[in-house]
Image 1 (cartoon, rainbow, N blue to C red):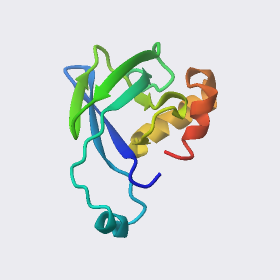
Image 2: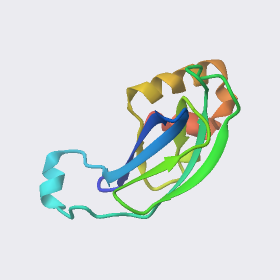
Image 3: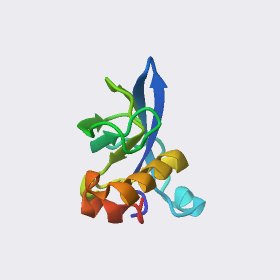
Image 4: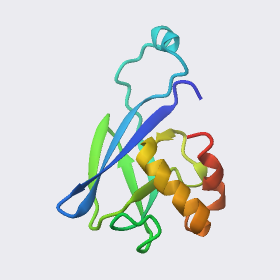
Length: 131
């Protein structure tokens, strides 16, 4: 999926609630691809289907919350009304984008998948190998 949108998901806590930052770029296998296909700052409209879960440092706590977000710029933010420990987007790997979560979110995903795998759809379990 070279040149496909890549969405970075960052989670911060602001005022006791989760504030999400979504950043998009292009997925490139190598820097050579950037030289060949140089369309800088190209912005895709990326429809994100997400689920958030965990609470107060407990990846298994709380009730999961599903939400949708349309990313139409290189970076945008979304303030949630509660604090969540993990965010999983690209439900069932249906989106035409790759998601980058970072190590902290992957550690929470591992806890959820090992202890309460039904919170995240079966198809999404397999998408972690590609994201």
